[in-house]
Image (cartoon, rainbow, N blue to C red; front, side, top):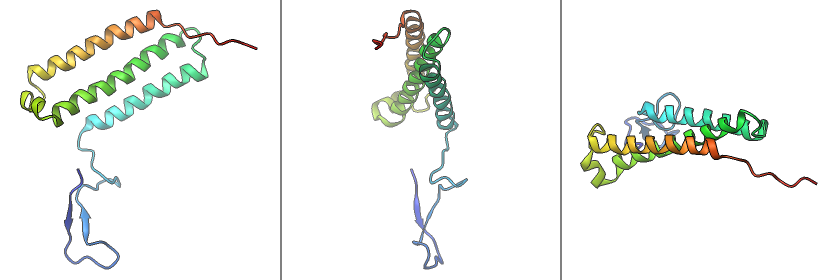
Length: 134
């Protein structure tokens, strides 16, 4: 969250407040490296899935590549969802305040195993719908 505090000797061109979290030209400070890694990994996975779907039309090896990258992208979103849930929801925060407790690890491990199984099933069973040609 951005914290605004009054700045002494502010001139007429500024509002009199200073954004204490503004660093590196960003309007907010990404103090968690996980947020940056998530954005990067999600972008790369989505780019590969988009190339497989639209660029290569899911032909040959691009079909399982699409399935795996789509599942990986979804898993990363669920991973962040679990982390945010344990940070923001009070009953969960009480159970795992530092996110190193067994409850948190079980939740993340269960999600990971579920997505491994789903990725395997998706890759094996995925067949694109054939569109009618004119």
